Amino acid sequence: MNKRIYQDAIYQGFPETQRITGLSRGALQRGLDAGIFPHIKSGTRTLFNVPALLEVLEQMSTGDKEGTAQ
Image (cartoon, rainbow, N blue to C red):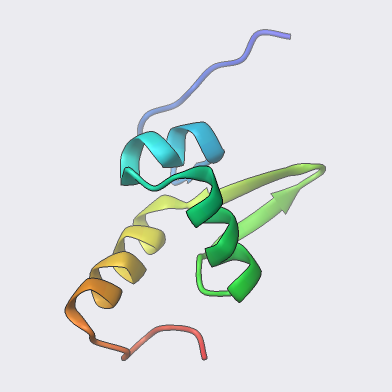
């Protein structure tokens, strides 16, 4: 299987999301487990909605809880 990474794709797997956000795999997994990081499941893969994730991270860094999952 030929894997391609689409840099402009909204949904990205763990490695690409780590590279974009600078978060470790463990930090991403904790965000998933807590239900605060936007993602979808595609078979056995977890794909992150990167633009929405960056928005969540921005809100977390500024302390703004508006728009985050509760």
